[in-house]
Image 1 (cartoon, rainbow, N blue to C red):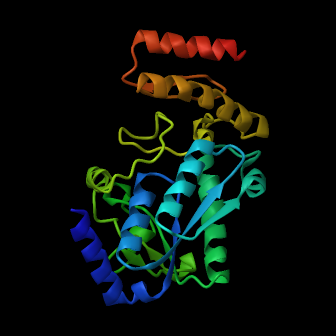
Image 2 (image 1 turned 120 degrees about the vertical axis):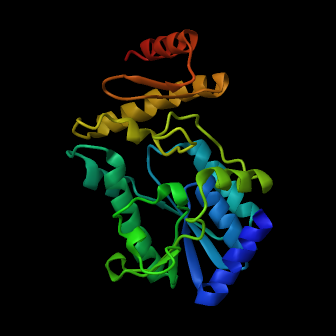
Amino acid sequence: MMEQVIKDVREFGEKTGIINKRVLVLYSGGIDSSVTLYVLKKAGFKVSALTFFHKWSWPEVLRWGMKFTKSLNVEHYLIDITDALLRRAVGRKGPICIHCKKVMLENAKWFALNNNFSYLAKGDNANDKIIGTLLDQCPGDIRLCEIPKIGIPIFRPLVKYKADFIQKLADEAKIKPYRMYEHGRRRQWREGCPLQYIDEEERITPELMDLAFRVNYEVSKIARKRKVRISVRVPSFEVMCWDCNDEVIEEVRKALASMGT
């Protein structure tokens, strides 16, 4: 499967001329962006990776991502957006991901343009397509979007493949990103950062951001040990878990109590 996908992406790159241009992949260290980076590199693209991180990012995921790009011999840029995120999000209501994505996309566009990249690449898969969104309104092949409003062409090489197929590609290539065993937004593996668990009706504060990291980092230890997926909303302390039994929930509650929450 992987060989055919690489072939198809290479042919698309040759047809459009993208393969001869510099491509900057927005790299989170998750399954989708890791497979995207792998496919583009193996297909012969002039590809680099860009990772945004902040004070509350999972350190284990960042370290794994750096090892992965090194193994591919891919140039990897890291940008700390802590200050920008604080300016954009504090005092506003969540979900914080909306504010964070705006910060990342704005910075990614200007970083790419100022460093002579011709395209930004994203790890979107077919499950990420949403009717009405800007990228999915692109005329022609939605793998390439050149809407002027974005400011730089967006390349989504795997957007026609579903999430379960991307997982099979990852398995074939032995790509196993570090997982924090978060609850995530959907049943599929879709992790991000602990800030997404700030209750949406709350005004965002630095104190809530610190609390979201501290609480979820601790429960992630239980999740990894138990091989279940757990996250905790703050400040409500609602426990969310896939496949948890009463014993696991009790362990989580004891951990929270020991933290004084």
